[in-house]
Length: 100
Image (cartoon, one colour):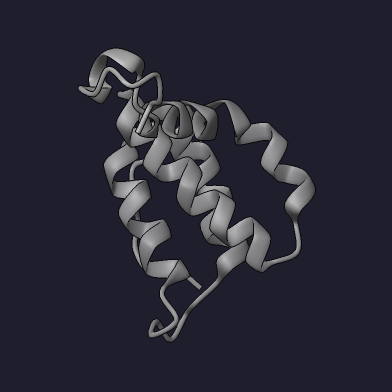
């Protein structure tokens, strides 16, 4: 099965291919292949937000496929996202001792 040829060093193209492969509406859906392409993309793509987005997609797919033990391989990218989602005391605005 070859949907398309994507340059192996072009992370944006690889990401799009993985998105197609994970789509339930795709006649050639292949979640395992999507995970592997996302894994390759993660090592090539630049930018923390891009890496976090891909890791989040991978986490969801790994859980769906019962491959939870592989999440540890991408945990550092997931932790970056979760840390950035929390407000610091300076960002809180209220001086009541709470973060929220």
